[in-house]
Amino acid sequence: MNITFSVDEHLAAQAMGKSLNQAVRDYLEQLAGSQQLQTELRAFEQSALASAGRLDGWKFDRDEANRRA
Image 1 (cartoon, rainbow, N blue to C red):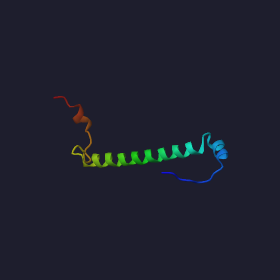
Image 2 (image 1 turned 180 degrees about the vertical axis):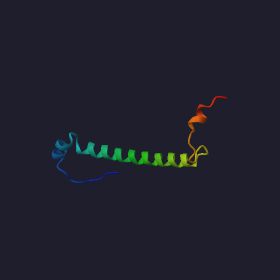
Image 3 (image 1 turned 90 degrees about the vertical axis):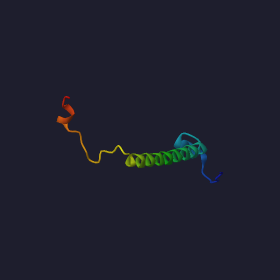
Image 4 (image 1 turned 45 degrees about the vertical axis):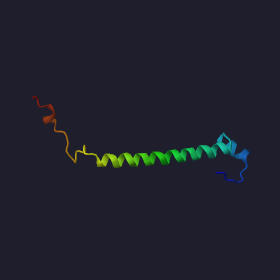
């Protein structure tokens, strides 16, 4: 996809230390990556919440953990 807009590229390059084109590419890559990460984190959270291995509030008991057989 191409988008056309007008910006003084020399000012932009001075401010960012890179070309305007590269800055836009970097931003879009970052945006796409963060959205992907959020999607993966939500999927992981749903999977963890649905897992049969949940403790449902149970906590380890110190005495029980140190009891010898």
